[in-house]
Length: 345
Image: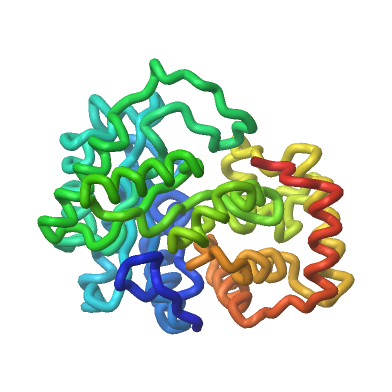
């Protein structure tokens, strides 16, 4: 397993990060422990979770993913060797059951972290991330930015100051953002420099063969400012494996169980997926491994967040770490991208 520096922090993380959002609904604790043990045996030392997980989120199961991770670390006695990342939930009606007011201010950020620490059975997290901005965002399937400053919540300055207090108290080692824009990242960096506050170490945004939008604008910020990208949905909810093509819905697959998650199954996404899957088969590659290997190879990527619902999927996904795409495959990927640019934001 390759290891890389986590942005400007002093943390070293595996090239692959184990995503956890299915644990507690789609996966049982026993299955989660099996995934954790196997990933750990393969050299993965980086876990990513969030206070709102599992997904789909709801009051019945919210926080269970963190509880599972906490119990696993306690049983294995390995907390000091795990690089643990979690997130404070942003505002939104669909998560209003978590706290009465979901603004990213001091009170909410502190309450969120204290809840996570209790569930994780630890007194610190290595990376604490803002799950999405406290303002109108261009993520979760939106293509364009709508300027509605009257809907802004807590200022980025207040959010950063709240995170800084947690760093000073030793409850957080590094901070990151998620579903953030180039403007937002640069604004955080400017505030950090002007006020002597912690710098953002990571950005967790969607990135896959079906959504390479962060290459425009954000990639330059990442490389010039020494910030690591933590790509999520690198398989586009499993779509890039090809298992949903031709209207297939495998039993117990995520999009079979939760058919509302259609972001990557729009006509443009299906057409691009067909091309990528055909390329993989033509070159003797597993489609999912090819898609992951591409993300692994990008210079602005620090750790690629993989997820799986079965051990067989997890083993195959981890094997992507050893897959190197030759120039011919990379050129063919670029040709497909030219014909199907970012079909699924």
